[in-house]
Length: 128
Image (cartoon, rainbow, N blue to C red; front, side, top):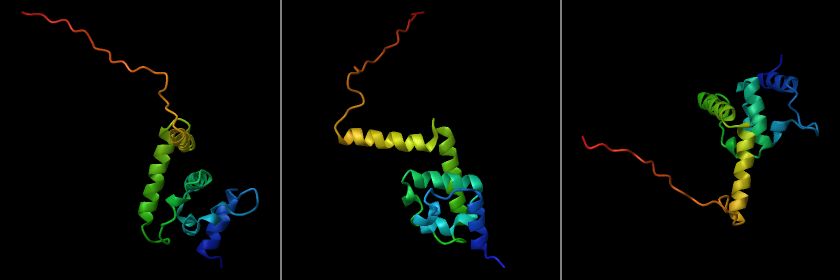
C-alpha cells in the first residue's frame, strides 16, 4: 500500500515538473517538498516558478504537513493574486526588482534626464 508521500510524489511526477537533470525541482527545498501533497496543481506550478526565481527563502521555515496548513494555502492564494495582477506576473516583478536594485547599487538614477514639473489647475472664481 502506497503512503501519502508516495502518492504525492507520483502526482508531482505526473505533472512533469522535474528539472532537466532528472532531479525533482523541489529537492533543494525540503520544507516545500514535505508539503507538496497539500498543493493543488496550479500551486505546484507557482511554487516551481518561485523556486526558479530564487525565492526559496519563502519556504525555508514552513512547518511539517498538518501544521498551519491554512496559512500555507493562504500564502498561495496571495501569490496567485499577485501573479495575476502584475503585468507579466511575478516573474516580471522579481526580474524588474532585481534590475532596479542593481541599478541603484551602481548609482544609476532611473529619472536621469527628466525634469519634474507641477501643473497647477486654473480655476475660475465668481464673486456672487
